Amino acid sequence: MQITITARHFDLTKAIREHVEESVLKLKKYFDQIIHAHLILSLENNRNIVELVLHVPKNDFKCEAEAMDMYLAVDSAVEKMEQQIKKLKGKWTDYQKKNLRDNTQYVYANLIEKQDQRKTVKIKRIMAEAMSVQEAIDKFEASEDTYYIFRNIESDRINVLVKKDEMHYKLIEP
Image 1 (cartoon, one colour):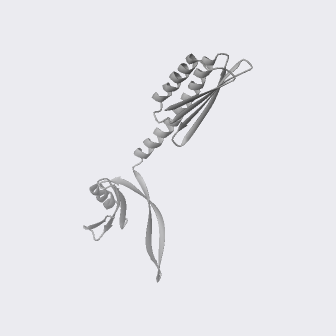
Image 2: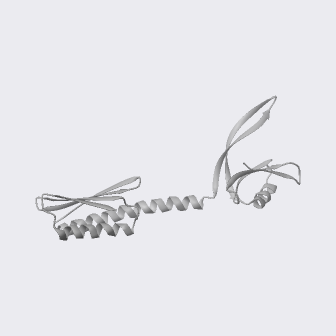
Image 3: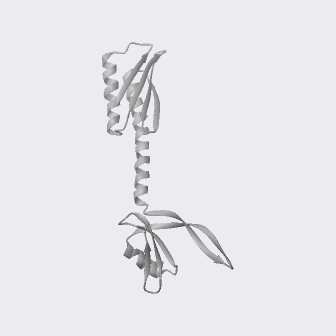
């Protein structure tokens, strides 16, 4: 992570620089994909203002803090940034968990039906559950449909089971 510090209307001391770098490096333990941190420290009418801008992949975060002491302002800005990072990380992990939890996949199937003398094609959205071939056959036998679409867990591809007759099935794999 690259840290850039800009001081406005005062001279940046070595102690403040070290405190800022140490505080910003603490953010690394919450989120290790931080690319760049830019701090703008300013002194305006005896108010210490810290603006912290953080660049992470696909996002930029900004927070601002104000205090009577520059060290307190830096700590306050870092705490605000921690909250934003935790929120982002929570969203990312919730999204990943949801995708892992969701074993279904939707498939658009073109169904050809005969109506009177002409054929029509209907597009239907079908939920393809993840299961083994044997589980699909068992579930298919319980249904009255002429086909069954599922996601094969061995190949991780969409498969279709079709009834040939009472005892025989045809497995279609892409």
